[in-house]
Image (cartoon, rainbow, N blue to C red; front, top):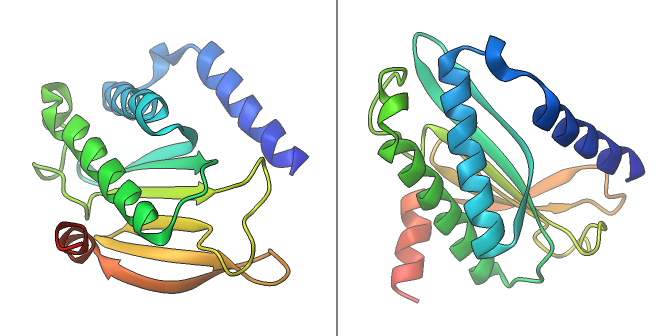
Length: 171
């Protein structure tokens, strides 16, 4: 656990102090969108960025952002949160005119982003029975819990992004 916190602090310090002038413009703009989204979600939903990335093969085709959440939420609230975060991230990406010329396809959809939210309680994982991580990848939202040894994640169930939104509308 101390190693995770240490690595997280190193990444934050490095990104705050590193001279980004040597980065390609697509990376600078992508990072700007990612950190804008992270800042908004920290203020609105108390989410803390734990990682980020992207992929560009013949054009930008993937952006990723990962969070920690220290709230105790129900399954429905976790679904609401991953849908909200996905829509916020997509909105920020698609509204940014500067990134469009680098994108492989416009607009970005839930197939073009990866988001994970790990739910923790004061730097400790939830119990084995609780959903401890929710992630969206390739338009699929997956819900995970930890095994008894807390070494591996087990997928409990998954649903498409559209199905999750539908469940929120009909609740």
